[in-house]
Length: 276
Image 1: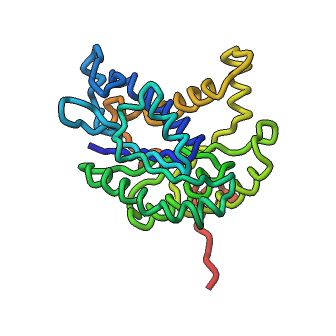
Image 2: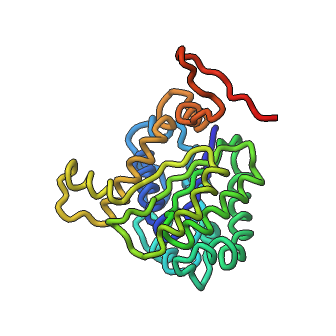
Image 3: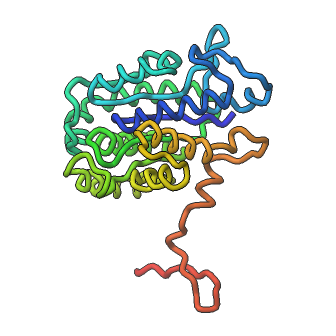
């Protein structure tokens, strides 16, 4: 089975990730206690991609939940599906990043990253044939951007042959919480370019626009936005619920831009000549 290990970092990443697990659990017929309660055997097909079957027939998400402050973890635990996660997979600090990229990447986050990698390693070792990792985070905050990119680089060092896929919420001028969001995003982008295979950029302004124009929601909440993102994520991964043998590598092949190829005048591709 081609398993995927999910990581959610920071307040935004955990909120999106929690909603994602609600959607995935519902599609597979998993209830709030982790037990299968579906009505079709098709729901159990490829369930091990995102879930690990534990004792008593319970299905536990292959998820690692990370934040530099405990409040977000408490909110996830008290949520609808908070009890399905493995308790040891909650990794959090006490001080927070204060929307500071450097705190997440170099100081507070660097102190916590080894504990996160230990949990991630345990999840990876529990897989038969892991495809790769997916991360949900925001580029505007301190933990999601700073520590999120630190995690990506560390995981890339340890698992260079596995796919790294991120769902990154990009700051929008019209929907902004803090003034330092552009700085945090700027410091994060080159890390994503260097260390990820796929990055799906999510724009809050565009999400609001979809809620207004398409879904006809007059006053959309962050819950509405998170549900929209989770639907997109599960749609990107819907090949896991079909009989097609698609996987993350196929997505990379479809979306990746081949930087070394240019289009000649006659429409054929030719390789760039490297300078000696």
